Length: 157
Image (cartoon, rainbow, N blue to C red; front, side, top):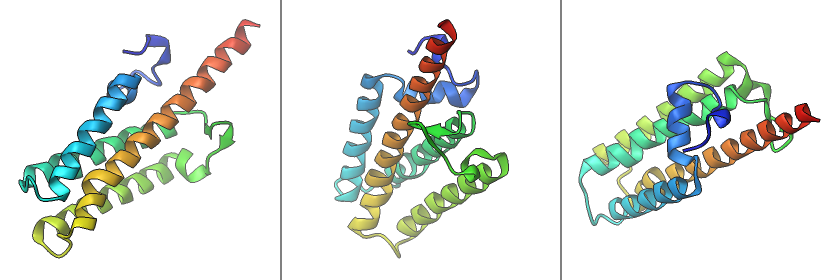
C-alpha cells in the first residue's frame, strides 16, 4: 500500500487505483491475471460468459473510471506535457468517460450475442484493451506521483 501522502484524493476511486496498480507487485499480478483469463476466453478454452463479464466489462469499466478520475484530479500534465483541456474539464472528462464505457459495453454485447464472436474481438475485449488500460493507468499514476514528489521537494527548498 502506498503511503498516505501519495493518495491523489481521499476517495473510493483513488483507493481502488492504489490497490490495483499502486505497487509493482499489484500491477504485475493484475496484468498477469488479465492476460491469462483473457487468453483462456479468447481461445475458447473457457467459454463461460462470466469471464467476458468480469474481464471484458467490469474490469475495463473500473480501469476507465480510475483513469479518468486520476486525470481529472491531477495537475493537467503527463510527464511534464500538458493534457488536452477536454480531459481536464469536468464535462469533457465525463463525456469521454461515458463514451468509453458505452464502447466497452457495446462490444461486449456484440461478442455475447454473436455478431462479433471471433477470436480477434474476444482478444481485444478481454486482453488487449484491459491490459492497455492497466498500463495507461500505471503510467498516469506514476506521472502524478513523480510530479507530487517534485512539488514537495521544491517546497522544502
